[in-house]
Figure 1 (tube, one colour):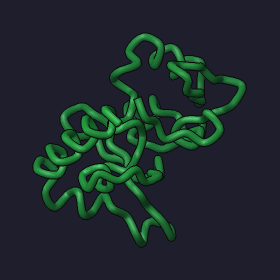
Figure 2 (spheres, rainbow, N blue to C red):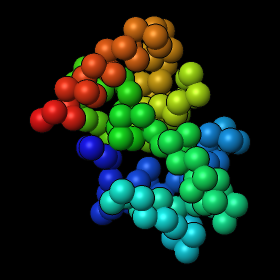
Figure 3 (tube, rainbow, N blue to C red):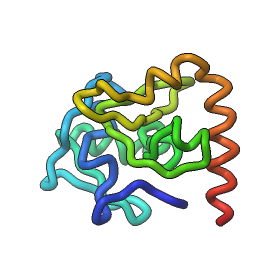
Figure 4 (cartoon, one colour):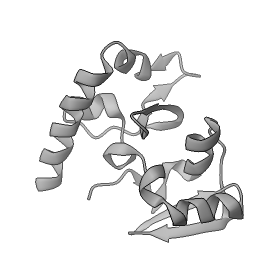
Length: 129
């Protein structure tokens, strides 16, 4: 599976559990980390690390952590973990720049169901490459 990693680190070191449970992007700590399927995940607390271990699929971002809008167009674009959305109990990340002046999440919100369908198809196609 393709993943958005920087030197093996997923989601720029942000704590996925904090994003999903608290709706807050908090940077994790290297000292509280976990390797999962070739990716290194950082957590803000041991409790969050354990929650991730107990229910990993709940916390993993869609499309390998790449921008959901870009995925709907078949492109692999880095996402900013500070720009996220929970839709149908799934975590979606988006490209964001310049203190979120440019943020593809706004585009997604105009038609989330249709864009998700497109992104799902493109993601499956990319997995076959």
